[in-house]
Length: 196
Image 1 (spheres, rainbow, N blue to C red):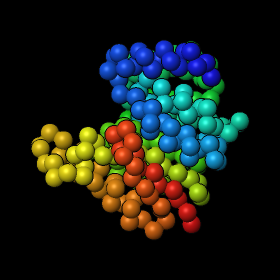
Image 2 (cartoon, rainbow, N blue to C red):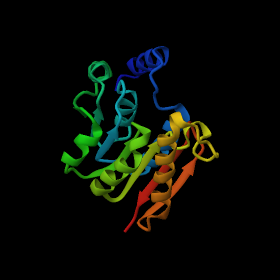
Image 3 (spheres, rainbow, N blue to C red):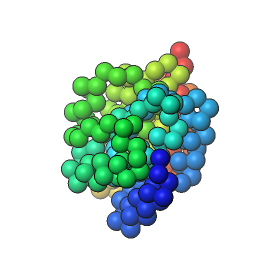
């Protein structure tokens, strides 16, 4: 991976106000994945590809990342960024809506990173669990959503997102096959490890 290019990609994304994974969130994920490098990672929400590029560092030698993005411009920019960072052979990008693409995938993944439409998190969880390997791990970013999720926030504009993030937390904490922790790093990170 070309670290200089990664720095430039990060700088440009921040300048363009494109939401990318926060450094402290990335650190936590890095710690978890370093213990047991995944062979396959699924990322829901590519944006400009910054997090996927970062994740290539934690992969098993033969490892691969599948990532999904629906915004055409971002898909294009992500592809260019993968080339610049010299990781295009490790990442496959699916262009389209994750709600339509996920049900068509039948892969098995060691790790899933959810960072897309907040109102769809429960659906993303259901699909992720279907494809998660034994002892696999799901990271859900922005789970506390500016603090709204744990407060009595009820403004109309974000109501659906907040309700669905609360539903996601409920499902991962009540699922007997998952061990879940909610961390206050970045904008909140839920880490759910599957154990049978």
